[in-house]
Image 1: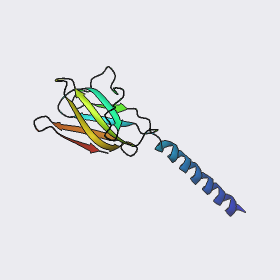
Image 2 (image 1 turned 120 degrees about the vertical axis):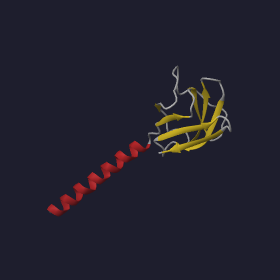
Image 3 (image 1 turned 135 degrees about the horizontal axis):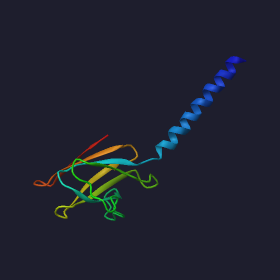
Image 4 (image 1 turned 180 degrees about the horizontal axis):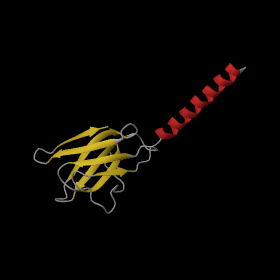
Length: 123
């Protein structure tokens, strides 16, 4: 009888942990790190390669070079998203495509203005 109770307790504990993990999986918030060399004035997010960017995720703030910011993102949309940024120093815009925000915790943006090459590290 003790073995059955212990087995039931372990099973319930395991089920509780699975529910907890499922709830956490719905969180698609991520931290963005600016390693572009330039201050960012606006950050927009859109599904895939959509050109409908929606609201500015920075609001009134500026994301200075070598700084980071938590971006709140609802996972109700598709997980794969693109980012569009506008730089504060010259108003130029750059895009990074195809981030799976349901699996990424941190995106470090990099940019070479001379070649217009974008890259990013994902964690």
